[in-house]
Length: 155
Image 1: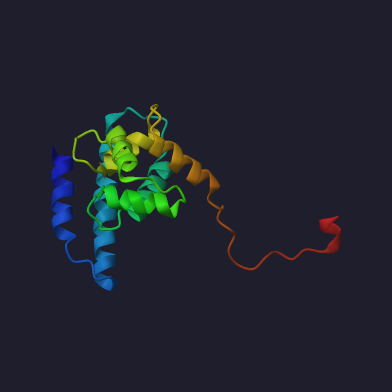
Image 2: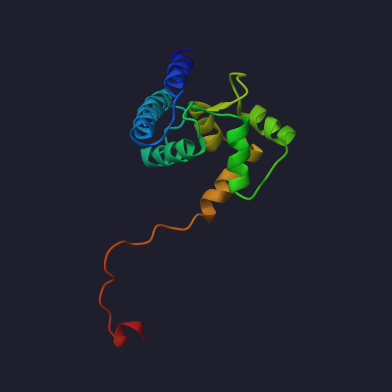
């Protein structure tokens, strides 16, 4: 499929990740590729009530977990992600988690599968963990100088 070709082309670009400018370019290219996936996801019409902001948040989350910028979350990236969330799993458990959402049989989770999992009606273990983790994330704090208050306002 064309989506697989995009990910294949992208993974060929992601061979040398030394950080700095090159890493920024890779992340930008990955963001553009994932944006195309969002467009095709919305074009399907299966999830009409989904807001673009929600998909953008999932894109950022996916990019955070896709450590090698391959366009897929593989077994080791999933392992690191689960450890970061404090939910370490065995390789067998991780393989089962991937198998629950892997629609193309690649043994990895691409962005389209990630979106389908997060927005789908099914209940994979990974979906539950990620949604719970998302609820427990601290809310963004306001930036800038705090507004002036007097004692009367606080009482």
